Length: 181
Image 1 (cartoon, rainbow, N blue to C red):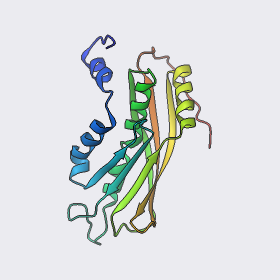
Image 2: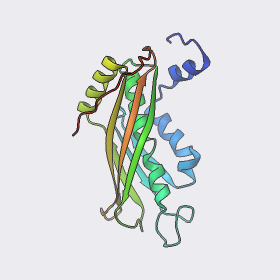
Image 3: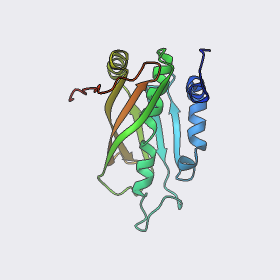
């Protein structure tokens, strides 16, 4: 294992997880567990995750539909966790990933269970790796589409993810330009 200078860096160094361990950590994570957000599968390359939000008495609003906050909570950490694990496997071990900003549009009431898949394309991974290697950080936007059991689009989220390589020194005044898609 690589040398870590302090406790913070130690935790960053050791957080390379298997898909199965991460899946169960998220299933037991209180904001997911109590809102009935269930990670169904994390793929071995960490480029895809399948999630289900079960409608229950714990996440139902006065209208009998799933709370918007539950839907928002389900999309909040996903890209950051997947990208962090991808980067660790690409030998960028000391990273920090954050959700920099997010926007969600509720398109239809979520009257039934919801499902969605988060997929990160190989091209996005390669571009992000190039930017982190060149600039020490990257900012990327990803969209998530959330459907009900009948396949009706209920919500759309846009998440802006920030990733920094902590093994590189910070340079004041540097910015990363994110190309428009």
